[in-house]
Length: 173
Figure (cartoon, rainbow, N blue to C red):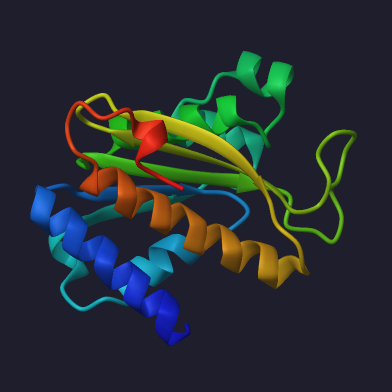
């Protein structure tokens, strides 16, 4: 892990600690990369609960409660599934903040309208704050996964630092 990612994970940890939040991750294409970055920070046991790596659709349903209907209608790489993953992780854990990542890291897996590098994210906080979005990243499999880890942590940090009452969409990149 490079110094920039280590610093970002540390800043997320500080934001979690400052807000009293505890994090859970739900990851697919990143394969636990977000949890790895978070747990590389000394003291993370104070603000990290657990991580789910749900690579298959069946595991998304079984472990996170993602609806078969949502998967059938939108596909695993969709904002709808990402948001259900985040909500499910929050529900299945003792955490108060959740993030999720599902995407097509490549080199295969592209489908019409979802090229390699398409990644969907979800965030859910116990206070009801929710956000989802789709990004398109360039590069090879490792590059897509790394950019996904960095992006989801950056948005989580911004969400945790958002002022109450401000629309979330205006507080994050």
